[in-house]
Amino acid sequence: MSEGNNVEIICVGNELLIGKTVNTNAHWLAKRITVLGMKVRRITVVGDDLDEIASAVREAISRKPRFIITTGGLGPTFDDKTLEGVALGLNLRLEENEEAMRMIREKYERYYAEGRINSCEMTPHRVKMGRLPEGAKPLPNPVGTAPGVLLEHENIKMIMLPGVPEEMKSIFDESVAPMIREASGNLTFYEASLDVRNLPESELAPMLDVVMHDNPYVYIKSHPKRSEGTSHLELHFSTTSDDSKVAKKRIERAILQLSEMIKKKGGAITPVKD
Image 1 (cartoon, one colour):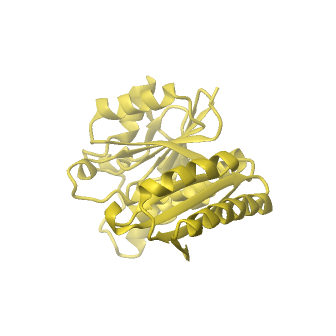
Image 2 (tube, rainbow, N blue to C red; image 1 turned 120 degrees about the vertical axis):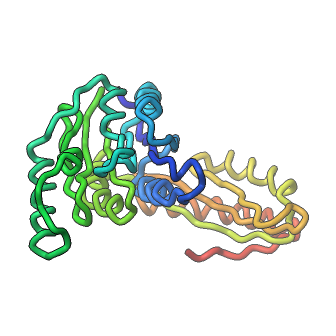
C-alpha cells in the first residue's frame, strides 16, 4: 500500500548533473504538487543511464509514495532512456502502445501538413516514443510530440513526463493535476512569509521552537538573506487543511504570536508579498 500523500520526483538527464541545465522542472513540480495538497518527500536526479534510472525507480517504490513522477528522457534520441529504465526497474517489457502510436502519428501528420517537417513517416526513432512499459497508458501532450505515460504499480501511480518544460507543464496541468487533487482529498495549502530584520537567527531560533510547539499544524522555516551578522531573515509559514478558512487562521495565529515575540526583542517585521 502507498503511504499518505507523499510524492517522489525523479529527474533524468546528464545535463542536470553536469550543471549545464538548471533543474527548473523539479522546482515547478514541487510547488504545484504542494499547492495541490500533496507532500514532496524526495527529489532525485540521475543521468541518462538505464541502471541508474532503474535503481532510482526501485528505491522510490520501496518507500511506497502515492505518486512517483519522472521528468526527461521520453524523446526519440539514443539518450532518451527513461521508459526503458522504468521497465527495467519493474521487470516489465516495452511494447508498442496502440494509443500512443496514434497520438504520435497524428502529431507528425499535422507537422507535415503545416510544412514543419519533410516527412511524416513513422521512423524507428519516432516509433521509439510509442514503446511503453506493458500496462502503461499514454497521456496527451498538448504542446509536443512524446506523450506522457501513466503506469500503476503496487498502488503507486507512476507518471513519466517529458523534460521540455512547456511540455511537462502542459501534461501535468491537463492530466496529472486532477489525479493529485483527487488523491489529496482537496486539501488546501496555505502559506505566508515575513521579512525580519535586526534579530540574529540564533536569537530567533528559540522563539520558533515555542511558536511551532504552540501551533503544531504550522511549519516555519527561516531563510537567512545574508550572513547572520547582518540580521536579515525571511520566515516562511505553511500549513495544509481541508478547510481553507482553518488553514488561514492557523497561519495568522502563528504569525501574530511570533511577531509579538520578535517586537519585544527589538526586531523589525514586514510582510512579504508574492
